[in-house]
Length: 274
Image: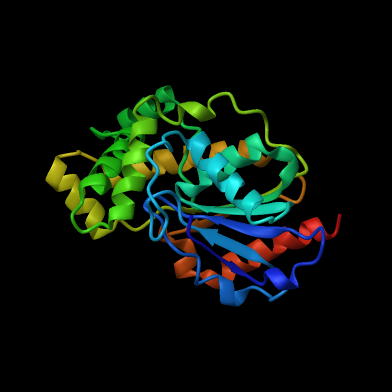
């Protein structure tokens, strides 16, 4: 698997290391790294089939994605504690990692995460109330389908989206339905953009596929649900916070890398104080 590390030589024994988990199709957290002090070590990696990582058809479930990351850390002899940073679809993955390896995780930072906690009943209700034809769960699947076939996307994005689509087709984040509560010693930082400006690609997709999304009302309903879900996720956790950013774009750490870097550093420092 392809990966790159930063400041490993500066890491002191027992200190956290940042483990970055990209969104659907991959991506980089490079805008953040120069803003972090050089004593904070980190690793970015590329999931199966993305970038220079070889595709592996055996990786089908999200649990296998998480296990592969854990195996990489073990192979590289990168010891815990891990402070995982997940963007978008990477948010659910780091939550699953914390469920499977709770004693190895000291912190989680969610950057505008996908709402994996949304139930079918909530999804249908929000669609109806917003007077829309397509729900959040439905659009999530559609985006995966589009990305897996889009000629303008990389081969790695095709593979990543196809794998995620296979998993979600068995039920919306079905692997997450019975996760144990988040271990309260894990500091959780959730950064959510809400009341987003409606972007041209969203409007074009809506028109092209006749999705019938009443965007402002639609986002209002699903934003409120996502905020409620993540607030409940971290309510019992020490050194945790929910940060709400009105009218920010989905790419929060591109729009304001200084803010995200500070929030990551705050989470890191909260462990050092223990």
